[in-house]
Amino acid sequence: MMNTVKLPHDLWLPFLEVGDRAGLPVVFLHGVTDSCHSFEPLLERLPSSIRAIALTLRGHGDATRPVAGYLYEDFAGDVRDALDALRLDRAVVVGHSMGGLVAQRVAIDYPDRVLALALMGTFRTLRGHEGVQSLWHSTVSQLRDPIDPAFVRAFQRSTIATDMPATFEDLVVSESLKVPARVWRATFSGFLSSPDFSDRVASITVPTQITWGDRDLFSPRQDQLFLAERIPRARLRTYPGLGHAVHWEAPARTARDLVAFLDEAVRPAPAALAAAGLNRR
Image (cartoon, rainbow, N blue to C red):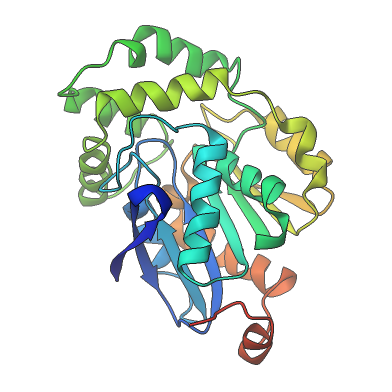
């Protein structure tokens, strides 16, 4: 079900919600220029006992597009505000790519709001990232509206190592085309200018699952190993033959592994959820 949540400063974020409202709350954060729709193949494979909430982050999809505020701390603050607006004390936070860095920042800045983390195709930092710097200098810094659909399609295809259904590819391309050039520029410049906060990930004490495809052209293996070693309760799952967007290429396996992780790490019975105040109506 599609809905919209209103945050402070007249910021509206669309979100896609599936599952039992009394279930374990799990918030999904997408990658750059994606939207809540990027999680559709994953959400449809989750059990109804999980209350899955896929947010569209500011500037993306059909969300409000403020003039400024595209740093990790801005996105993380929006996640906290969304939890407040949805009356959720705590939630599991799942992040892909940029969303993985935002998820890390949520866990660092608002530790009392996070039950567990699941990071997919994530990074230690994007500051100084050679591939992002190259894309910024060659293309993104020069983007103007309207953005060329061929560039967007090539960008999205570069995130996978196998295939995705044509209808879903068309969907993610159409969602990326909603993002204006100024938001592309602001977000990528934020990647390159934001301080590296990886020295703070050791403060993340919740159970953490890191999922990575070994043909990922964006997220290096050394970043996964760094995070798995530094986050005290982290574990790394490697998917052979898959790329940056494992939830697009192998949604069934990604959903199965996520559910197994939640069952082991954090998922209590519904009565315990209610007692903990995790699903206040």
